[in-house]
Image 1 (cartoon, helix red, strand yellow):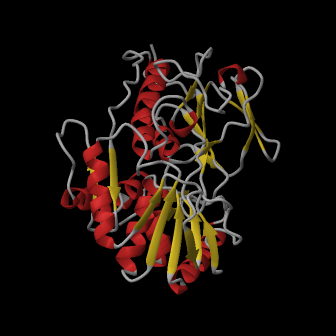
Image 2 (cartoon, rainbow, N blue to C red):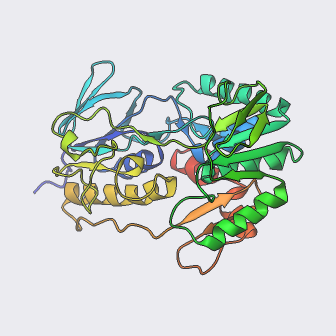
Length: 368
């Protein structure tokens, strides 16, 4: 037998260059011809986007080029127009035949939590413009008391302690989800120390008349009759999965909520060689940490199928976990295997100060 490895390798098309997509693409670069399809010209580290809003000096750190992600594969800068079980058609009309396909297109979310701009400079300018509006505002309204609303309040107060920040939500408490009551109590305590006003249990009767993130003083009223005057506001809710590109043979796996049903091995339901992960699947909440773990399983399973070595593994959903920084030094969280609430010093070390920029830059091959 010849000791020379065959020149042919299977093609793996990874649709989406977010937290899960870059990990899968990089992990399979040595055993497959990897094609990463992504419309943005750079990876966007959304976890740190709120810090970049209050401090635009962070912008170059959260927009990271894909140039050094892959040693052998290629990045196609385009959107996926149609994806079926064997091929990807991108916006330009190019067709990419693939032996394996990974759907990792993530979700949309209101600015500043995410940006829909595909050009880095366009995105930078929007953050800078909104930063100017925020810096000039005396009163800020945040609509949504989930992780983004709480974190944004903490970021604003860390830079401008004197600004009046109000958070409104229809829920009766902050941070919906399977979290300990003690965690919510601790976050409420810290928000109170920061002077953040919480107005819970009532929606706004009407949306503010200005666009989110733009300057303009207004007054709105909650369902309970409370008037709120603010100079700028941000929408901090509304995750929408991106799955509109699915072709007929994949659409049976899509739910009415536009999520994708998957098997325990993270295969798209009814498919053997199409996998999905992250915000677009029915497993787990839409969080970067979950996408990272799912990417490990998907990459490992495809590697096992390509090489014939090892077994295909099932993904085991993680227990409830969340880390909520309120600026660089404050915050609280809930971690698996730890009793009670994780305090501010640990949150600052895990996420608050560096916002996980270093590990993402390492994956993308960007020098520190």
